[in-house]
Amino acid sequence: EDKVVQSPLSLVVHEGDTVTLNCSYEVTNFRSLLWYKQEKKAPTFLFMLTSSGIEKKSGRLSSILDKKELFSILNITATQTGDSAVYLCAVQYNNNDMRFGAGTRLTVKP
Amino acid sequence: GAVVSQHPSRVICKSGTSVKIECRSLDFQATTMFWYRQFPKQSLMLMATSNEGSKATYEQGVEKDKFLINHASLTLSTLTVTSAHPEDSSFYICSATPQTVGGEQYFGPGTRLTVT
Image (cartoon, rainbow over all chains, first blue to last red; front, side, top):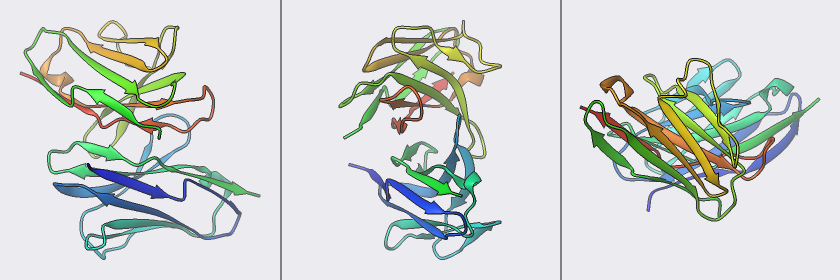
């Protein structure tokens, strides 16, 4: 059965810390891996990763995909309290369907 | 634990017909369930929030008479797309949380709706 597993499930850090969130997957018909940030309502799209080894960056956030080892990481440097959220990883299939992981709840303390 | 299922996984229907999608929490009681719709460029739109035993809260711009949501039990919520049109074709995802405020959301595997 297809799986998308995120770790850790929750994480508490202090402002300024760097965090690494993990997402591993076992799926058939993989097309891409997506990261979302969810604060209140709908998850906000962060990154889409399709190719291995190419880092995507947006400000203090970056992500990379390893299609050989079937995982992705999301890095957040110099964390701020506004980074507190649930970070979701999802795999997109060739037919555009998606499967989400359980999420990592990040809490950044002042 | 914390498994959410959706049924059907894929459905094709004709314009003008209604389609019901079920979302079930398999191993926990979900006080709140959410329905999302996937749009191009990977964005997800929250359609509505449903709490067991009460009326769903719809997001602005979502027609409540077209997208009927029923959360009749702590493990089941249904989304009925009434009088479906081709523009309703999309990927619909539900999520469920065991708590009313601040609880983790567990996502279902989604339902691909195609309206011909």
